[in-house]
Length: 86
Image (cartoon, rainbow, N blue to C red; front, side, top):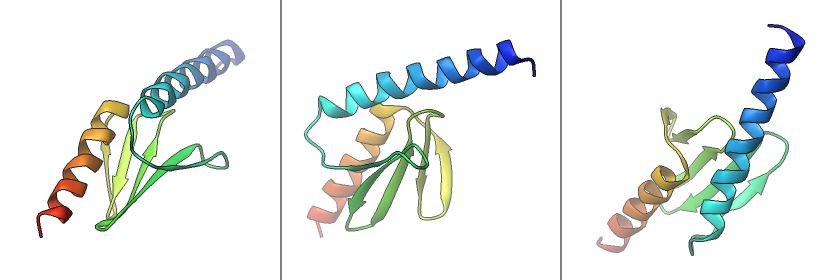
């Protein structure tokens, strides 16, 4: 990759992060944010759900799948709803 391509990729990742964090902040779901690895962690009764806002990836119980902020919010809400029904 050229320096220009790397620079463009960094800009795209930062734009994704800003967009995703803005979406998360609008919803009433608590999370922790870690700048070291650019992750957002939702602690649930079914384990931690990690969201990587720069790459749009979600990780839970050793599985990684694609998803944006809306997807992770939906996923976490389903976990919370499922745990509350037990």
